[in-house]
Image (cartoon, rainbow, N blue to C red; front, side):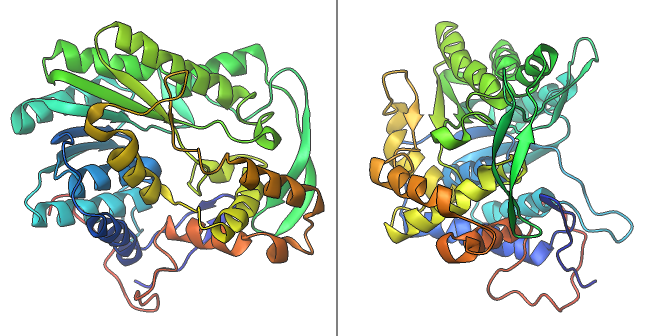
Length: 390
């Protein structure tokens, strides 16, 4: 069938298998161009491995370190002629490329919050790898079912304590308008922390350790974001920020339990998760303009390459005074933030494309779903079925 992008709000409801494979290959080619990374882990588990930072982490550890990997994700296969999700196609393409390189690439598709998926993962590690040297926790989910009680918790993107009014960008209409978001209730804050905080990270590490599939000295890594003041009310000081604070504090909890743990603070990039956050798409569009002009721009794969080649070298991370790995260091440079601040009050619907890199934002958004890749014939019929095993 011929597949074209169909966008609804901040989600593209179609995905292109050939385009997703081309996107994955772009990232693999970039990692290969940087040369092998010495001293890295050779057996890696990535929880949340099919898109964004999780996918790029899997690519860097596999094609930079030469690591065997197990990826856990929750993606939709093709059905009745309907295309699979982008994450499914990404994983199929990664698996084929990794196995062609002689690397093991095991895949677990299901709810990573559940005890069943944790056990399936443990069984695969024990059977195929014996143990893992590194666990990357990169989940981004709107809801979580507690594995013990069955209660469902849903996260919200809201400010805490007071309403938030700010410019936001309707990416469909290319319109900028004032947007008012009412503050979260205490229950909504608690539920968001339950979904996106560090509780499940601890459950994963406890289960892996108890099962004996963590190698001696094995560490774990999760991802977070801080961002600039303009996004703080909806992000760092909002419900999602409370969850990220909990995630970051969890690193200390795990380390105290004998499992070395770190959180990397990454830069703003276009992902399915970031596209849903009010204010953030507009900020990203302005940020990209500035960072590209200063030759400082990075996508997910560039961030993960820098993380593992420079910041996390030999499992001895370079951290700030709070023990966090700062991959947002280029984004938060004074000259970058000053330039974004100067643009922020001047941006309008009329000058959006002139003074921002909204075109770059759109390009990156479509690439998440396999569209807009060079060399892909989007008028050709494509097979929507894609096996996860090469």
